[in-house]
Amino acid sequence: MALNRLDDSYRQMMDESDRALSFMHDQKPYELQRFIDVYIAKQRELGSLGSYASATLALQNWRARGYSYEAAIRRVEARSSLNTLQEQQVGLANEEWRIIVACILLNQTHGRQVRPMISQLLARAPGPREFCRWMQQIDGPKELQTLLKPLGFNQRRQRTLTAMSDSFLMLNCPPAEATNAQWAESLPGVGPYARDSLDIFRYGHLRTTCTDTWLNDYVKWRIEHGRT
Image 1 (tube, rainbow, N blue to C red):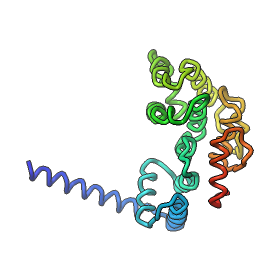
Image 2 (spheres, rainbow, N blue to C red; image 1 turned 90 degrees about the vertical axis):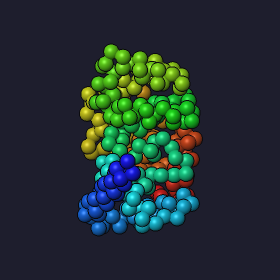
Image 3 (cartoon, one colour; image 1 turned 30 degrees about the horizontal axis):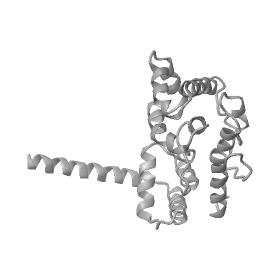
Image 4 (spheres, helix red, strand yellow; image 1 turned 120 degrees about the vertical axis):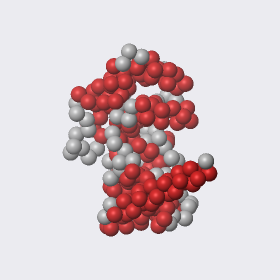
């Protein structure tokens, strides 16, 4: 048994070494250095000491999750001490849809209620197509309503999320040439809060005229730390 455990540990170590070597061969020097610079600067903004080792480990993890170099850099740049749910979606596939979902969940409730369950929802449906397939299942709507119950208005939220996701796919959102969130205004459930969130987190339009306090606080934090 002891030998088997040693063999397993050795194989795991070799697998990790192989992944590390594969990761290093996959690097593009300019993008790698750019990411490291951004990552270390962000860590210092957040009160930590960034290092080359921690930066490359973070990039390795994000690349393994499907991030492009540019998406990983955007994800790092979006980070703040507020750790908003919207910034957690930056750089991921279906980023725009995920930000809108977060906003619909946050409407008329507090982030501390949403945080424990949004990861479950997005793990079950990481994009609009998966979400719509889920809602087409017999028990899909009831499963989602049960998940949303702690937030209140669970049936209404389920209907809004479903209508928004259907429209998102039917309208082929987002437009490839989009530079702001105007395209999202026609989607069910998208009001000023979701529109401002898209403008800030997806398109980088940092303005302190939002109607939401948390968004204003996020923008002020970014500006104060030189990220305009």
